[in-house]
Image 1: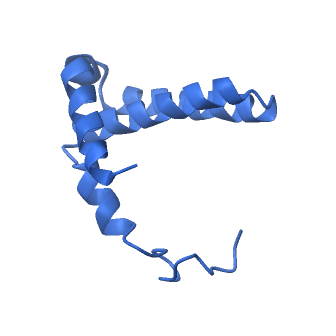
Image 2: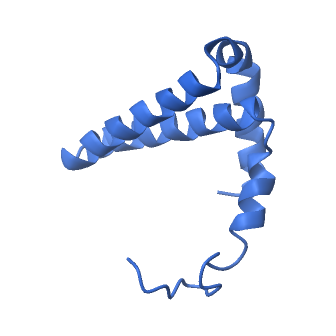
Length: 99
């Protein structure tokens, strides 16, 4: 994904859901993200690719909502952490010992 698209998606999530996200609050919004991660795990265990795709989209959307609640530009955060190399070993591809 072109990182410029992250900003576009974040702006869409703000337009669609910022009022609901504010009413729900930061903690409950984070719990919705955790719920979606659980649903992703279940989909992976069941090897249901279509459902995995759907859950990944939900996780992305909830992540963007959290970023909006904290007024974090996820596009910039991503570019700052993940440049052209692994943030840990600083190699591309990653050569860290852990899998």
